[in-house]
Image (cartoon, rainbow, N blue to C red; front, top):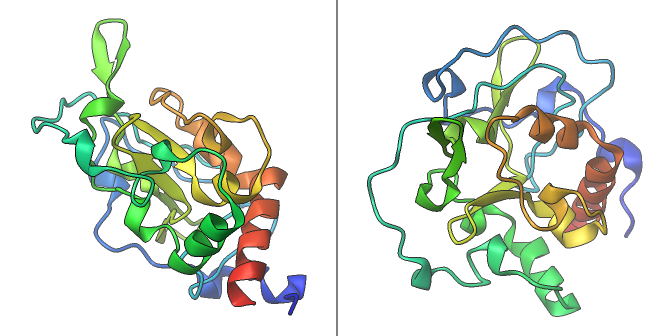
Length: 204
């Protein structure tokens, strides 16, 4: 059954509230107050995916080096998006049913995300996996997943349903100095289309 668009596009009341990922404590700068978004949000609590039209900046750049060692051998296609190639229909069906939780890795390990920048090394940061609504409420970016193998972040729904060559939809995004690109992707038509496809197929 095809889900009417009206049942997917929701405003504020269906945002997934944040748990224990606080961007205000994760970066080396604070996020400025965001302006009022100009369009409604796509949202669901049933799907395991949440997103909001967001026009502010994110404080998500890390310069603190992680201390543990990544055991990359324990990561496979079943828990690491960086291991995916072209997914066949059975694999698509598996991930539509499963959702992104088992491959999100919002808590790291982030050692392989190290990227040199001038005299500092930058890393992926937990704050990337959240954003803030215009009323100040923090919500989780459940569509954003991290690969401990490649050290990049990806868009879960775009990896499933988009043919875009954008980093988040293809080879992975590692530019920790420019988290605004993740926000721009969240607001993009390609992302919203992939998210709608995911929600439609998940709800049957």
